[in-house]
Image (cartoon, rainbow, N blue to C red; front, side, top):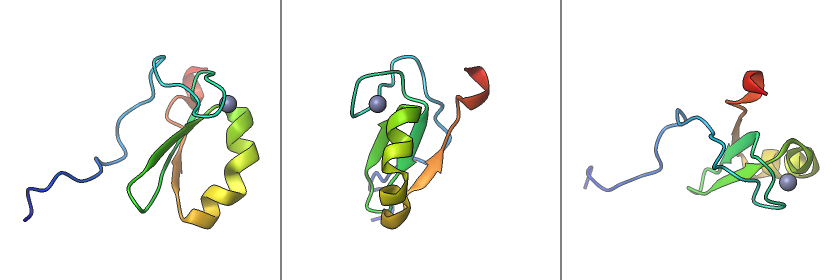
Length: 68
Ligand SMILES: [Zn+2]
């Protein structure tokens, strides 16, 4: 049962193809949910949803921060 595919570790960098789930802008922040979901946000929408993500126990990373 250990070969069931699970959520990959947080090591995949965001690319130009990654888009904010809310508005379609380039994603700057990814949030991995403990339930297994993955959300992508632009900076604007991350700020808007940050409290909710913390509430959900999401693991937030900003892998492209320094590339902007
Ligand atoms: Zn957005």
